[in-house]
Image (tube, rainbow over the protein chains, first blue to last red):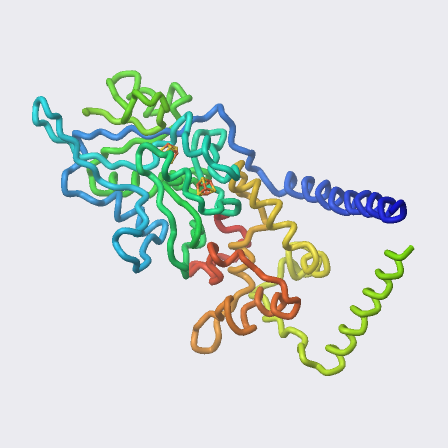
Length: 241
Length: 141
Ligand code: SF4
Ligand code: SF4
């Protein structure tokens, strides 16, 4: 008994050295080659959608999303992935209809993160809510917790995924704000598509930066969030609702 | 003491199995496809080959967290870059299947070592069409 305990300790000691040493080495390599820093909470990414500019039958943002993330698998309609959809809201009192794109609202207090048993649903320091598919077990608690119906589950084996947007069977996914584009200074695909159509209904930017276009607009115009009663403080805001 | 004895027996058993398989040639050595380019004149990959062989899994796993969770993307241990450089098309322009056969770069060794590789349930196993030679395309999630 003693012998085996001793061996185990020795083993653990040795393995710690083995794993720590390359870790330290790696870190210095990464510093030398890497100009980029981790994201911080100094930034909060957000989007302002002007429902008056959003055209009823336009699906440019939806198509761009499908193309960008390769959401093209041939599956029955009820299990098709939906990262963004067009919703028509009608004011019962006045009859005014507004058409708006709805995607993951990148909540400041995301219920999907609260319920996730593995920590796979997480919020980046800059406010983007993501699923780390490396640790997602596909339990779908987050889908039930999300009040905006923003998440989809991949039911079938996928092939030829986009290199920048990996996704696979048995995991949950949702709008990731085209995070790899944002991190390299590009606009999300939907924003780019809306602009290319000349509709300019979507602005995105850093809501913590007082000089950003989105911050200035938010200060100037009245805007609202979907289901403010839930107090989730979404990063997606709507104007003209 | 008994444990030690048993361990020795087990070790001997393993040795025996290895020898038998080796001698009968049932598991042929993997034929590893050549990469598209060398990292530098002195070095074929981003780390010396023996380090890459042993540690590529650790590199990828360590940095996937940095990229996915912390948004650090200028990382050369990058699965997209590995695939872009290491996976080559055959004469008719088709890429090998990572789930079948042994022609795919990753698969060639992983079949030999009987180690399951799960990466490609989500990540594509084929190069980007617009492969640039800078060894550092956009790092995925
Ligand atoms: S909209 Fe849904 S999926 Fe997105 S952060 Fe909020 S709760 Fe999570
Ligand atoms: S499906 Fe995945 S991300 Fe959602 S709660 Fe379960 S483990 Fe977390």
